[in-house]
Image 1: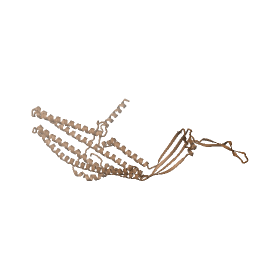
Image 2: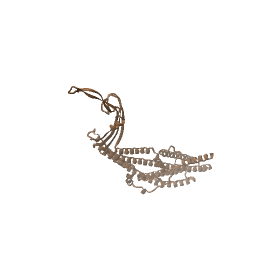
Image 3: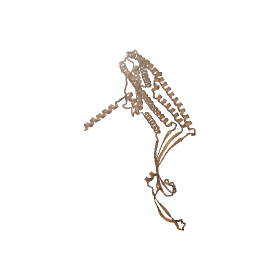
Image 4: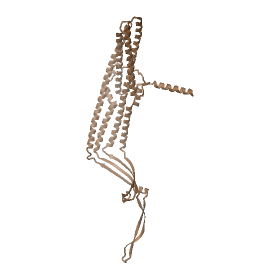
Length: 472
């Protein structure tokens, strides 16, 4: 038994270790963010509300049906609903009814409301897509920032490694008396500066990781590691489409444009709904009900209780007339329910004549809403075009900077290699050596910055063309 528990423990530990060592690709980060992001969940709730509004507007086209019942206790002088006579007895009564109504015509307001809610639902879906696009780009930015910081850290660590070798070599030369101690002190100071640069680079990498994990709503940065993709940098600007070409395609597929167009269409339908306020409203109503009264009675019997003189005959004889007595009994519940059934069907026509200028005010507001939606659509298109222009300009600038810095790195590598050889034989002092080394580090940093800026702008432009964000 203990052996089995031990083996299970090893399996669990191994599984946990493998899980902890999972590396996150860019696509995995994007997928996770789209599933767990709170802002997306909120927009999904907004979409559900739009669906509920559409369902409700459709159901408004069908007849309503309501049922009701009342039970009353009657005291003192009141009208018996069964006989419509005044009574002073105490009794109970019940009423039961079904009622239904439907709007036959109201200026097509109900139909247009259904149309408008359909459009609003589509717009809410595009709003959700826009949010997903924004989050995807933000995740890609944070992901590339980590890659950038990783490479900067590697450069800084490499600088320290090179300097450590020089410090060790110079220490031996100082001990042999062939090099002054000042040279060694200068190198040691340079080493301290570069070690500080490593700490700074590591801090920047940690912050980049923290930023990405926070965007993913992960509880901790611990054991979080991204995959290092391998991608090539295209060095020809001719491979980048022009802003006009990109915009012509993007304006037809980007969700913010689609949403703005649908919202303008919704406002136009809103004007049709407002115009419907000027038309008459025709409704059909029907009801079916019955009642019961505790005071309800029915005739049970009639008999002669007595004879009273009522006159004389011509011969002088007395004429007697019978006196009748009536006997009533309570009408049963079932009899009253059947006897008191009532049905009604009615048409109702309402003509709007004057209602505080509400119809005209609503129509005016609807026209203003259309103008506002038109401005919003145009602003959205302008913003998209400017973003594409900016991304295109940034991509070209980053490409030019990358090509230039790549040449600089190659040149400074050769320069540093030559300076290192001269320094090793004592033909170059430590200050000149450090200067060559720092220039190489600066060139490598500039090349990295332009590299990832160029990659990101290319991905943005591809994204506007409807392509997924991938690093390859």
